[in-house]
Image 1 (tube, rainbow, N blue to C red):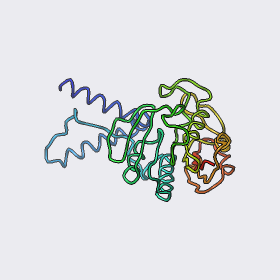
Image 2 (tube, one colour):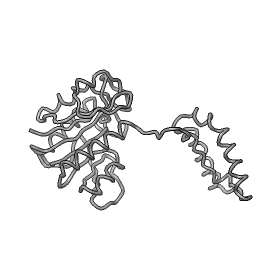
Image 3 (cartoon, rainbow, N blue to C red):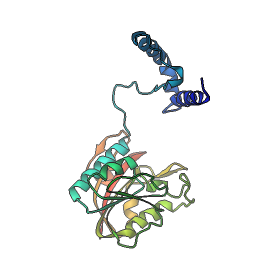
Image 4 (cartoon, rainbow, N blue to C red):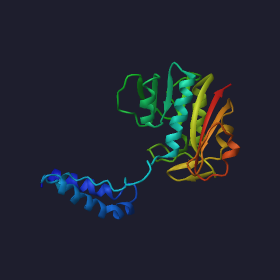
Length: 252
């Protein structure tokens, strides 16, 4: 076995027991071995190379798993944008997968602290700090920032430590949006807390209170159980620990 084969084997097998939870890999290892021999028996004598093995030990589930926060917020934003039909949309730091899909129908500018090195028609990627965005005041008609502001100032992505980072980020989004423009924003909501250095969780009323030049036009959320509540009220989402609030604001 070559050195590159050994490296590939080690990478694939170590990864099998790290993602998503180590105990899952241990539990399903006997099934993996059983399936290996079953496949070999019906494969007409063709051997499976150990060096090429790539165990995936956490996919034997009866229902398709998904992250409710990211699944529903992407669906929420896309539906609102399709309805609004902006000529151009700017996103700051959201899921790159979501942005790539939206760019198929809406011209997009994607801004991230760690620039995206990828090319697609209708998608321009630029570097930017969410507390100092590279746009003038009142410059943007349509703007989104999903599951991002809760990270600012915690150092997780190499950004400077700043206890006021989230508030500064939200106020910066307000600065660059033109009057009449729309901001689509999501963040963890529930019991207000700082889970250093992963993220913050905000009371559902906190972010609207920071946006003094905005009016809240729509609010939806995903609760702790992963259920989606569309067109609700922030006050109805208070009894959660780690929910996801989705706010559509309009600058007045």
